[in-house]
Length: 284
Image (cartoon, rainbow, N blue to C red; front, side, top):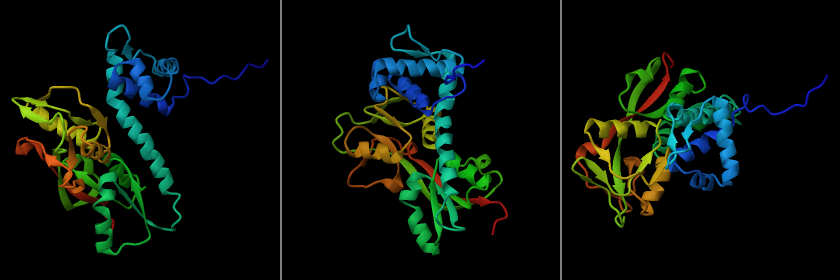
């Protein structure tokens, strides 16, 4: 006896479902989420249903307006960004072992440092025959711990536990600064304990986002209006800041002083961090 072979949605989860889920978390509206994901609402709804089937629980309360997360949805949201980053970090790790260079030095770093700090650092040391792999901060450190990287250059905000098992030393410093364009129509500022204006933020699960949230929480500051944009990329947010779409915390190392101005905010809004070089402990 033979049976037809069907694709089982309970066995395979598609990466696009995570992006679909995050789009609905952002818009809280099926129509707008489908538009953001460049698909029809019916196709989008089917994909969301398949994700819920795969997880075994409803993620959204569809009876509420705007659409609200269920407790299961809140639980999945806490993991979705990290899960997506880890999938892409895994892809980068696989690609890194497919180098055209034999025995090349494998350097992991973040996108911001790769575009700014890394090149002068390499030139100063005369390094050659190397591969540069861009990943999240946690992905960089994990690559060193697992032996996928020879060294990593990453931002470090003082979490000693993140560097456990590694030899790390400070090689630079930087800070996140809340900036906007001079012509922003809805400028960002602090009124009492509320941050007002057109604000753009980092996605949950990112190092920058976590540090900014901790700072605001420590000073009991709330964001008055819903952020106009969310992204894991400092470079993407900076491009929108320059276009006058909003304000965002941007690494100082990326800033063009003529294109942006510091928002009217207390000095503690600047979030300082170190740039560290991490390598396996005991490596020469």
